[in-house]
Amino acid sequence: MHLRHIQPNATRMKRLLDSVRAHGVRDPLVLEAMARVPRELFVSRSLAAEAYDDRALPIGEQQTISMPTVVARMTEALQLTGKEKVLEIGTGCGYQTAILCRLARRVFSIERRKALSDGAVARLQAMGYTNFAPLVGDGTLGWPSQAPFDAIVVTAAGPKIPTALTDQLAPGGRLVIPVGPQENVQQLVRVVKGMDGQLQQEILGNVVFVPLVGEQGVALKRA
Image (cartoon, rainbow, N blue to C red; front, side):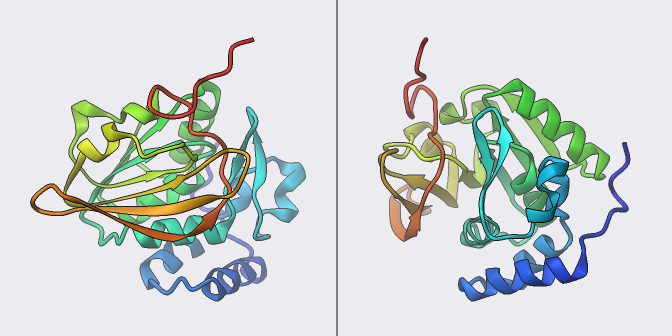
């Protein structure tokens, strides 16, 4: 399967980017990266016609691909320049990963569900991305052997910010994560670690995400 030469539909992509701009995203690097990633490759064929709508879509395993505007807002909040080592918690279908690969030096992505991780890896490799490393595991614990990270993005919502992730953030680094209860909307939070190790938090707005399951997140429900 070779997907690297597939180009997004120009009309549909313009609609997606117009929506992203309307939500206040202005970083030209983020807009350019999103313009080059065909979102329909990350959903089932039956949903391809809806891939450029600004809404979350199912990807299996009771998970979703995030709204394009939310992906854009979270990516912009990382303030990437191309030199960063980035940790992504929640690979999912790999859409956010693909955009990060275009904006960062190296992307490390953790996914709890092996089926999703395997599918994302195959898709990203077929699209020609080589600057990422996958891991199946508990994302709330981060990836200690690869720390520190210049930026960390979490694509699921936990009740609080995992200390494992702030510990693995490099001085000057940025962490973007949805925080809040599962039965309601959550707040998108950006954490910046000062050169002295102090953490500063900023609320970027309201979002709705699937649960961040793990030791430092939401407990996994047992049957």
